[in-house]
Image 1 (cartoon, rainbow, N blue to C red):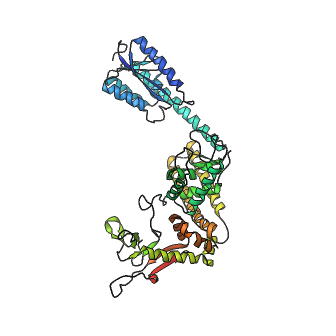
Image 2: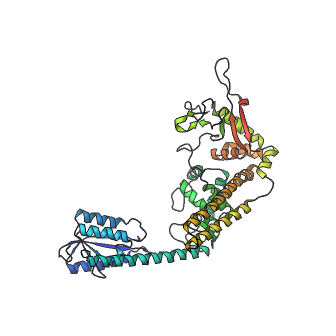
Image 3: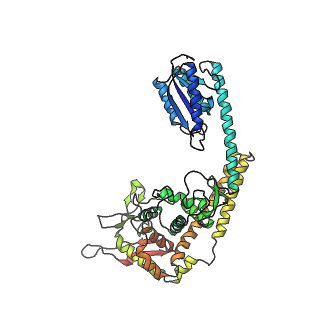
Length: 476
């Protein structure tokens, strides 16, 4: 390796981990000093590679560093100038890769803050020691920053930065009334059974956009509704740890319900392909012969059917005995549900025993999550082993899952009761205007499932709809 050959084609590499004001002054100063060193050595700087505001410790991809390695391998770069070795690497594995490439392609290395010769064992040892020191410094800094963030979170402090949060002003402390109303509507509708897909379509039609000025996606709305921020709470690594110093838009109870709703592993954000559900009773209708769910099967365009599908290769073990027009089954079930809301059975189902145990369930969830935090802290202090931590964590997480399921059941009843309990007239009036998701949620509140029994053909061999062959199994 030639260390100081004049006329050598060199590259300058500059990097800074954090550029708070976005001016790039840190890398600009590095570039100036590196070019001065190259000039003193008689090296020609062919290109400057800059990774601004990117940490070498985090493991994130550094595009310009990667491009520099590619150019070295292509033979266009024969020397590298850096301000300090820690600008190149803070991970030992990256340093070893760089040493191998420099030796393989006879590349010289120069540092403004000290001489480094990777061609000698002493130089490589020095580089490795420097790299280890830089790595240790980054680990210490990372640990201090993490601890500081935890302290701020537990104190309910707001760490403001990045894009403006929808519903709040740029400082994160003041509520924007019109955006707050959108959040409340989204929360109310999601808990009532509307899908994220239907919210996206409705907001798009009404011209409602996010804080970025773009229309909100399903993922954006989901993230917003799961965030503890909108209920005035502070979270840390996904866990709510304190009451925030800013005002909430929805209640903490609503946040707990939304997080339980979207955290349910059984919940699917997209059903039946790109268009979502198109049949009102999908998942609720069953075959009266074999008991398997009936599936939406259009016989031809405009002719919707529920059918028992026999397809062993796809784990659909239906008997193939039932195929019924969807319109007749759906009309019968809807009429029965609307009529049921006039009766006392639905009122008792929705109101339960008159007590609301939501607060108790939320308190239990909070206690379990606090136990998880204490367990994690004990592991961090080496008071328990990894196997002990895993063994103790599992039953706690199972209890949290059970409590979340109970919260979702309460939510489903509360959503229907809020709007239509004891008011069947309003339900009949609103039914045609409700979204398919909302209609499905209301039906599922009072109907466990619907059984479709086989019917015999008439004298002409045709099968006509027979309402007596459709049996509703109620939840009350």
